[in-house]
Image (cartoon, rainbow, N blue to C red; front, side):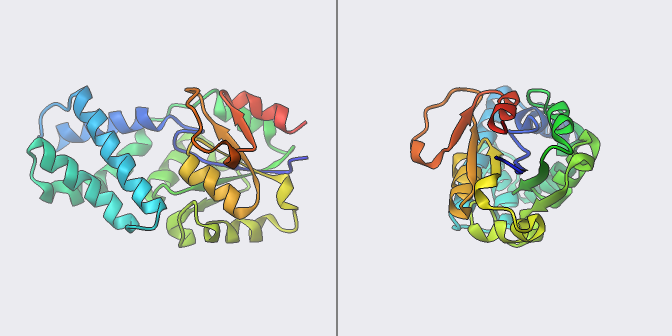
Length: 228
């Protein structure tokens, strides 16, 4: 029986790519950089993903991710990399301007309130996630929010989950479920922490290591069946 759900935000409860596209296009206009093509956004997204993977492996720090991804992207497309710092600062706030729910996630979280305890567990920045959670209404429905910058560790580190377990209290780990779209962050982190893992995989991608995954869902509504 699951008594606690730990929710990832970006790519799980909220459509991160929609927010990413809108924020980058807005800021290209704001910074006078001209239009940003779909191809350029796809390239940035790939660069960004690579930087976050390096963070998850402990190879670089969060500040190096946040600025380094834009430095690399700008250098590739002929923009002064010195803009990366101020661009990222504005980007963190703009990310929260576009709220697109995945699979009616707001209604799902609302329906589960009072039936299970629910917490946010995210590697996103405090600036971005605080705004998203407030504007989306998701934050008000949670029993707690854990952001890696405040925790002092990133998923998939088991250290990230220590304050989460302290807040949850004496609940057996077999009754705690983490739901997330990232195998290298959410699912590996859940496995290291000893809790039940649920991979949100709407695209039906093949899992390189199925042994990490306790449950796999294509739609967030499938979570209800896991609580039965």
